[in-house]
Length: 435
Image (cartoon, rainbow, N blue to C red; front, side, top):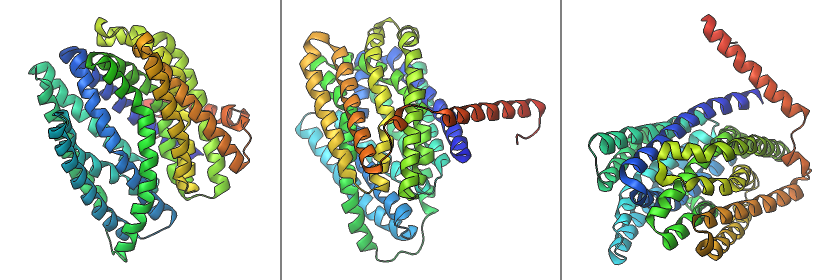
């Protein structure tokens, strides 16, 4: 547990820096380009997110082969390179054709950035399977800080248009691919029976990709509905609420990253207990953060983004119940996919959630506008959390209260972590290394 706490604390610190850079970038785009262009940028990012589910699926396959099945890294890496090359080329060509056929020039931006984003994300699968969270943290921090710097220079200093901003976005992803190349080289080595590894990787990756695609749709279906029914300016305002709410996600994500390797490679009983621990800590911490953000969020949005984005405050309040549920559910996904090897179960759960979100949002959007998306999101995430929790308890025999109620041992961990933090601060002030 101490190593997990240490990794989580480090991850949280880096993620907060990355989140701060992301929020600052959003503020720059919102204040300089306005709600309309902010909405268009958010739409392109959402499309990229859907396509990168392919990367998430392959990364899950790599983690399962290398971390769980203990296949040599060289074999898995060579198989991954073959698969990535085909996927990157195929989807980039398909996007280009779709852009011309549908008269959607924004898809060309996605086509240009996708190969770099795909390579950057899949290169992290090996370190994560080894329990190396820092590599992913640094990658995320570099992405957000470099793009903030580029956006600030382009939009604030040179008053660039949205097209120039897209160019900066692509350039940042391309620059990071150099680092990704050196990350992947660490795991290069002798390869044996690569063709079989490719086949297994595609089989598992396809199932995991479907799972990730449904998860991404569950996460973003409201974005596409708001864009389709209310237009780019409304989407620009709506995504501001999402961005502020995502700050709570970074309270639970460090724990997910820090425990990924243990859940993937540990025993069934250990993985189940660790999953339950993570769920209740995420539920408690994110719930407390949501309560604070309910009151502080709306005035904070107006102060940071300007009066044009004030309606995002009400949207944020309706999103908060869903964010609490969303931050707790992924732990079940990691357990079911990486430990049990059943990505299809989460696909069904998230499919039900996605359908619920779409139906509720479409039914209410003409009456409630942007708030309908938040209502649909909160309802759907709550449904997925409930279903996942019931299924998890059934297959593991973990009592339901262990998922949502903290106990004395949990409080002791918080107290120990707090005392450790105080000790480090005192040691730094005294100029001595912390013990």
